[in-house]
Every structure is written in C-alpha cells, then in structure tokens.
Image (cartoon, rainbow, N blue to C red; front, side, top):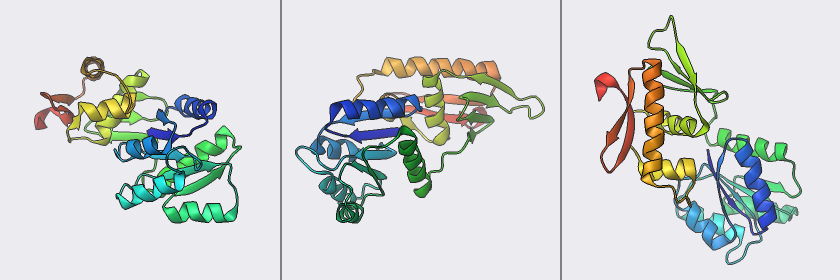
Length: 231
C-alpha cells in the first residue's frame, strides 16, 4: 500500500514514515500543502495522511481541491487542532477521517485500516490470480497448479510488492512508471533496470513453483501477469 504523508514538522513526518515503513507500507513525504496537493493529484496513493497547518496551502484547502478534482483517495487529517468546529470543517471539506496529536502508532494503524475498509479496499489475507496465491501476511507465494500438492516459496519484500501489484491487476498491463511509484515511491530515482531485475527474480520464483502463470513484457510499456496459454 502506498501512503503520502503531508506534514511540515520534519521529525514527526520522519517518525510517521518509519511507523508505516515498519508495517510494510511504501511512503512518500512532503512538507507543504502545495506539494501535497501536487503529489496527491497523481492518484497513485491508497491513503493521504494530511496535516492541517501547512505552509503554502492549508490542509482544508488541499482536501477540498482534491475532491473538486475528483480525486477520491481517502484522506486522514492529522492535527493538534481538536476543536469540534475544526473537525466539522475538515470532514465537510472532504476528508474521510480525523485524528489528533499526540497519537499512538497502534491508533494510527487502526485508522488506516478503517479507511481502506470504508473505501471497499479491504486488505485481505491473500491475493489470488491464475494458479497463484499470495499470502499478504507471511509474504509467501503459493502455486496451486496441482491442488493436491501446492508449492510455496518466501519472497523478498520487493518481490512481494511486485507480485502484489501484478496480482491485483491480473491480466492487465501495469506500466513501469506505476510499478516504480507503487513499490519505490513517487519521488524515487529508481531506474527501469531495477524493475527489470525484480521482474527477473520473480520469474525465477515462478519457474521454481512450476506455475503456469507468467509475467509478460510489453516492450517500452510495462508488464502483465497472465496464464501461459492466454499470453
């Protein structure tokens, strides 16, 4: 899952990023409202964690503009302002949830889980496609080509993230740019050869599992996960 943090308190932003990274999230961080709006308008994020009091553009205006632009990404307002009028204004501006500082890491994670459920993007324990099943907790990839004797292998975290994006879009083309943004982050300097390297690693795992599912390359475009006889 890709999260954007918009917070001008840099130590707090770093702490938030560390909490989310430790819980398996990919995170981008910006420190003012104008950058926050520009990043969020990309539509690549699953959740935006947004402070209210920001340089250049406040959080109320950021979320209101996102909704005017028809960006439906869930927004969690995170702020020290805990008055009822502020909460009402934040929610009426288009935010989905509101959490006041200080907070505990467990509380933050609970709010994020609730947001994904509310948007119909429930985080299931497994993701399936073709003859594959990806365990989202253990990061194990399971092949059920032979239902009586399934095989599994543990993936590295980057391999897991790649498999997760491809399985979530099974049969569809995922561009290299989307993979970089979802896995390495919107502001990443990752190059195409890094993507190709992890695609190669994942292909080796599929061969080990004797899966009939394959990663198809569309030259200069991206990749798709399909069954071999459908390619």
